[in-house]
Image (cartoon, rainbow, N blue to C red; front, side, top):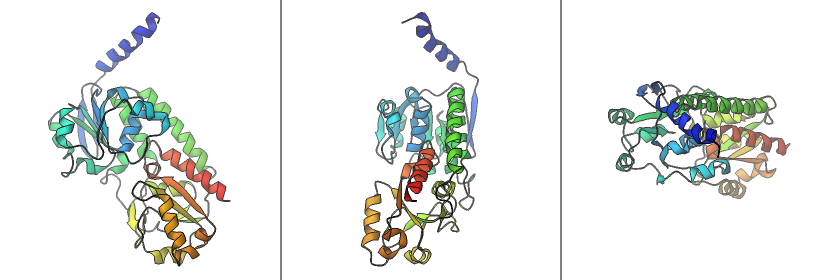
Length: 310
């Protein structure tokens, strides 16, 4: 190994150690980091994948709460990080790992039922950050989301860990991918029922969350785009009345796409819907509906499936 390769990690370490203090404001709460975190814990899959995409696995001492499998491109890096709990870890477990940064994908992480308020951790000297799209104060349930929260998260975390160049490159790549789909949306002019779970009452999407944005970017018109909220209960009567062109099935551990399709095909009323009779089903994993690193995957995936239906 040459001298340059030996010295480069030391130079990068010294640069990070002497970085200027960075103040991060997340959902109305601020915290100042004197140096980039080196003992981060991620509390949801969206947060974990932002860290992995930026190559920050060496700065992580734990992760938790996966919704589905980590994509192959980050699997090797993910396997180097200890998994602290299947869901949210207990506060005692978190404290035992002496973190300096807690990064969550959902506000529930900092509820009293889980890890407690972010300010409690700040008082202990542990910084926190909540994925921007999950901040209800910043993004009310009746205001449609844009893709900007994804870029905000990447840029914020990149700045915090002194890897701004990586963040800039990543944002540029994601923007280009999303722009390519919106320039030729395969679902243009088609109505869609987005089916997450439930049989007696279908659990679907409202006007204004990540899943609504996902369908919108591919040109689909959700049959519940007029309902406030991210996830909402619908009625089968509404689905039947609209008779949508496409049925989008959310693939999730708690309700598989195959189970939902089988239910609709076996039901005497739902089986008469045009989309069911013609097999006009498309499927997107739950993690690809969230405004995180895999959202562009979801948009491309859905657009390709819609193009295939034609």
